[in-house]
Image (cartoon, rainbow, N blue to C red; front, side, top):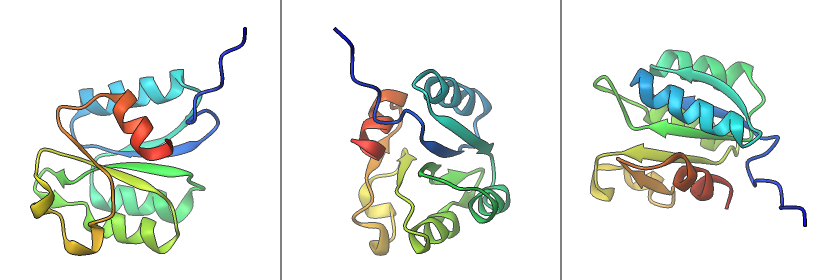
Length: 120
């Protein structure tokens, strides 16, 4: 019996995460599930560059990148209709109202949980 391919298989996913080990774990998981990882980007300017110059199917955004909030990246993704999830230690009240409908995976989380939140 064949197993169904992962919902993330063949997807191009931007990883925006400032903690190196977390970014590497996430990237390794995504690649093992058949995704193509874009990045990881560790700051807003690198992430915005990736959004501007890459074809993306989804993105995983750490909200706080060494004190820099990732909301400009979220705005750029939303403007292009690219789905994304936030990974954060903050509660829902800390996220601006315009992102109220965006799924959040509270840290610590797992790559599997993030993948399900992003692609079902």
